[in-house]
Length: 285
Image (cartoon, rainbow, N blue to C red; front, side, top):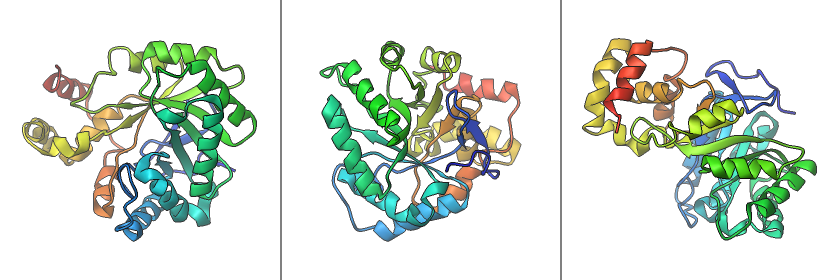
């Protein structure tokens, strides 16, 4: 059983309109165990960093059936096997598996690789214009009704797609929309962020550190002065800026425990409103 309130180090945020709370920072796993095909060369390192993350209360682990050709899910499953009930696992169904029956088959594959009989959050990885959204969402809801998934989420959905998808659900809500969001990539701010706030949908920010681009010029230079002011690093300031929205959680990826420690220093403090706006202006397109 998922125990809300069991995290206290990095903080919690409510998942959608549910009573469940998830960590404000989760661990992304893209390219951990391979990109589009399996890579077994760093398996032990990946398992160890996932376990280290869980030990730091980063108990939201985000993965996908596509990552590493399925191998990433295997690594996540191995890493959390002894404490599965303490971890919130989010995974995704790929665009080529969005037909009604294919969704069921895809989840069975994910459950097998993860070594579990349920997934906490099952997400449509990308919308597929070639497959009716109704077909996909009806399959997702059936899985939720059967208890094989706890919550339904989507990724990379624009507002019209979110609106349409929600009309096909009768018993469950869409609790999350995973989107690209960082100081440099801010396309979601105009419509998606406010829509999700209004409709009780948690935004999960992937690449919240722009794949390390914020550590390179000119991005680093823009953030360094503010980082010094607060006694923080550029990474911590950039991530704190993303998390200023109370309906946003972030899922940075790292295979380095020291980097994870730095990431966790992004929470538990706030900048002034003036400095949040100053950063926004620095990166305004």
